[in-house]
Length: 457
Image (cartoon, rainbow, N blue to C red; front, side, top):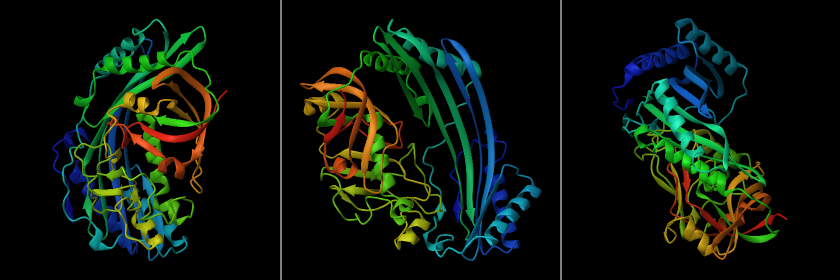
């Protein structure tokens, strides 16, 4: 029903897109011959390289090349799944047979099955500019990592050690198909450079890092800039201590503000909702954020970190405002979770796509402006632990960052705990800065929340 996005880079892979299509078609035919009432398959292949350098010496060089076939079969409402990394004809037959055997012993699920055929994507798969292969030689990758780390080590005499710098590349392609006639796929790439450094003084040691992740390596910053950023962050944390205990305003720095978006997405996802384990159950159409906050999903963004023309169920993706004027307009639903909830799917089989949480007033261009607005409180730059209860929204995490007085950073902070409730935290957003980081699939600028309990000294 669909055609693949046109990208002529097939020689990079051991199998062409046409070969993946043929394998997918063969698997579906085997499932049909085995008695499956419906079936779906995904065939994928990828490769990449990772180089790590520490203190100027090469620590690890890794090359990976992988492939997989995953097949799901249905016998009425009974489902079976099996996978293999062997693309031979015998392996395909054995994998389909294994999936059918599993289905025969699985209980019926009235919500199991392929999407309704009229929901599936049709026509050509748009090219969203997701594939920019980058295959540097090992020597070239090592040189990039060395330049990144060297810049950080040279920043200050306080930088006394390194956890290393890394350069990673990955490119892959896939085909997804089902017995209703859907078949589509495309190539993707992702590349990153990062560095972690350790600063020390008479009071002790502090660690911090920085990294960038892109689809197109041409968009990576100068490696030295990444190392320098890591060094600046590590040195800034020297002399950290606890802050006063009390209820104060809190800022989540942009690199971790995305975790708040992630918490919101988890609570608004079908799996949590149909299991009755979300504080957002029944919140559709309700105001859960201030009216100046929106949460946009943009799956068709060219070159986006989580762009996809169709979801894991084969449904076409589409732009939507999940939250507008603070009101929750929709959940994140796959075909299965939508059936469990008696709702329509939202093309989120496999997860969300390119989320942007922002303040429509755009009154705070950066973190510095947000700090001035807060005046006094806590700037959080690191979170520890996983203390989030999605049933009732209770939130408690270890944290580190900086204490703010009179709109300026007063001193670094460590060994503290922050606590609140996600409902009140979301409703208590005062402002969001315009300093979103493009490296994340869930993006938000720094978030200022009116109050949270901070347990320090």
